[in-house]
Amino acid sequence: MMSWLAAWIPGGAEGVPIPYSPRMDDGITIVLLCCFFLSAYVLSRSRRFLLQLVKDFLLHRERTSIFATSTAGDMRYLLLLILQTCILSGVCIFNYCNDIQPELVHHVPPFALLGLYIGISLLYLFLKWILYSVLGWIFFDESTTTLWLESYSTLLYYLGFTLFPFVLFIVYFDLSLQLTVIIGLILAFFTKILMFYKWFKLFCSNLHGSFLLILYFCALEIMPCFMLYQGVIQLNDYLIINFRTLKIKKVLVSQPKPASEKSPYYDIAEKYGVKIDFRPFIKVESLSAKEFRQQKVSILDHTAVIFTSRHAIDHLFSSLYGIARNNP
Image 1: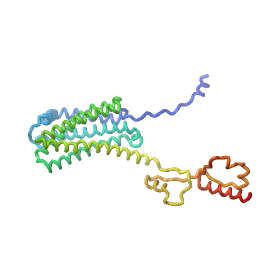
Image 2: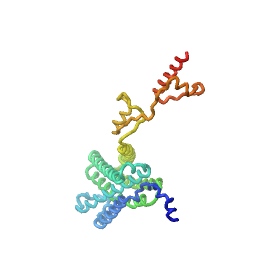
Image 3: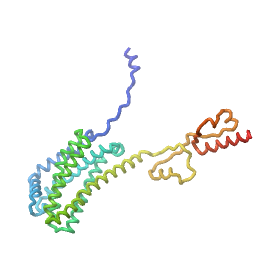
Image 4: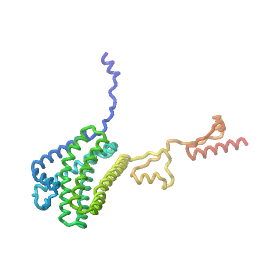
């Protein structure tokens, strides 16, 4: 009896694949663990120096440069914190892009995307550092520019610590996209407020200077954020189109091969690097006048005639000509 039942039980059915999620990615987990151990290591080795940076930032103390007073070990720890900030920023961008464009991870490997976003974050901070240095060299004295660059670096150091719990929430908790965006905007707003406070302390001396300061702040802080956002979206669209095309090697067209090389099919093949095979699936053959009469088809009984190709039209008029010639 059991063997008879087993013969009727199906062998199984193909399951539905689970959609990709960053919280199920072992690579993301390893990256966050590395960031956690990195933060713990830096705090244990350079806690007093980091606290001094915060006091100098908030109290606006005039002092010698940290690049001159800090040790080589302190500078290594600070560089590690900047790297951690870029890594966590890349994870945030990766999680956001996965929410708004989930098809992206089906065309590009997730770890390659994460590395790309981390590289974009590094490039963004590096370009802003160069921009601040150039503008400070043109419009301000060297000591003021140095103080601003040190304050900017302090914000980057502590942004890495602040981003870590935020990244844990957006990766491992089922937060909605709207809530994630709201929390991210609050964090970005708080960071920009601290930057504006330091700008005001360093560069503002009168009301006229305050107005120019607001203009400079919008140009150097607000606009680059929008440019970064638009650049990431455009990059994602480019990756989706090109990586999707790489998976398609041949395209089958159910038409005869064009006689002219000016056909748009050849332009598509050259642009996307694919091979186009022309295989006509439908063959249109003409009927003689006798064969047409045997089918007893009255064209006048129909409201329309649909032609599938130019050859069908040629065959129709050829048959009608034969009928008219046999029945003058």
